[in-house]
Amino acid sequence: MPRNRQQIPREERTGDLLAAATELFLAKGYVKTTMADISAAAGVARGNVYWYFDSKDDIFAAVMNRMLSRELRILNEEQAGADPLSRLVRGLSDMRYSRPLHQAMHDRLPHSEAVREAHNTFLNWIVGLVDELMAERGLDNASGVDAALLRDVAVAVFEGAHVPNDWNRPAHEMLRFLMESVLARSSGAKGRRR
Image 1 (cartoon, rainbow, N blue to C red):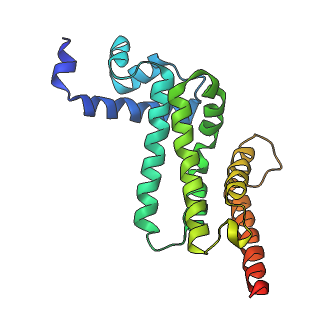
Image 2 (cartoon, rainbow, N blue to C red):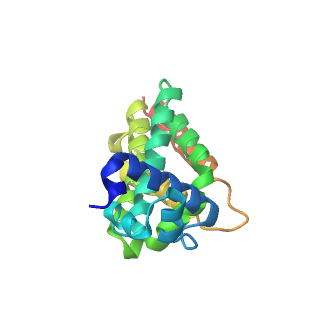
């Protein structure tokens, strides 16, 4: 077994690789970052990177999962008492710096199960907060709100906002508008039925 692998705990070396990869992916993008770049930045022999990650897609998925986990931990600490919509808007706003990486995920979805899983984890976070918001407001299909449609529209707004162009508003602004509009409409409809 190579000497450096014996001396450095696996978790520490994995952390070094993820930190280096995160920095490089944010600075250069997914396409322009190579495994050689990551290994050099982490101080790991190029071939040794593959002891920790099978491919560039696997390290990319791990970076994205790590970034989401970090953001959720911060949100849970700073926004513990906030309503789900505020947490969703804040989280999406805080993650705007990683928007180019989200687009890179879309490019890699057809090619990598690991990237698909990381992407689904992110979308499940959005859907979970939409569900939490609806439950908090007492909204369900019986109240005239199509829960599945609302989830799908929230995800579509977020995903569509990541198509690069100059006229889109940030996803967090569009989702806040969407959710507040639906909630106001459904609250008005509930009041009229009473």
